[in-house]
Image (cartoon, rainbow, N blue to C red; front, side):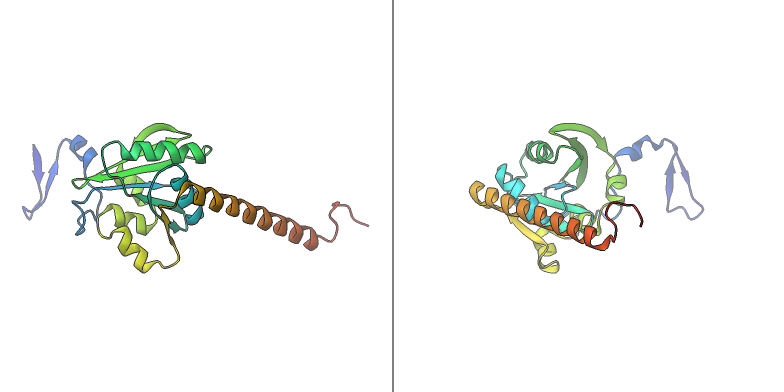
Amino acid sequence: MTQESNDGDFEVPDDLSSLADAKPMGESGPHIENDTVALFTPIQNGRVLAAVCALNSVHGQALETSAGAFVVVDDTSAGAVDAAAQAVSGFVKTQPILAMERRAGQITIHRWMAGTKGDTLPPGLALDQAPGVITTLMAGTQTIDELAATHPGKVFDARMSRMAAFKELRKASKEAKKQYKAMEKNKRDSDPDPSGSEG
């Protein structure tokens, strides 16, 4: 049973349970029927995420955003999103990641934590807080290749060898330690009295 509006063009269902699987707004792009598997992570560095993925045999392209990096996985076969999410969330460990897949226009999003699959999130709610590039990707408006063209320097290939990935992570770790030491030194230099006491 539905209620019809005055102009007769819009029907409001009495039973709202049918809206639970409704597609999020904007899901009408030219690529909507193409299957997409992606992971949204708290890792800030896209190059690091690409290396983490490659080290765990998860191949694809990582894109760096202000809210964290996400990777579009090459393998879109059944179960691919779970395998990728298990590997990457096992690396992140202390923070959750979102495993997203779009199949035949339907988006499914699961939360993963430390290698364990968690709850299912409503696509509209999850994507509402996500960076615009993720929304356009999952909505089928743009592909990762199109996003790479408009975000130069922000997309990283996660198809390197495991050895190359290991070297990339080691390099990133050294850079992070160097930045941390520089930040601590700057903090000490800017404090006239590191002991906290006066005169």
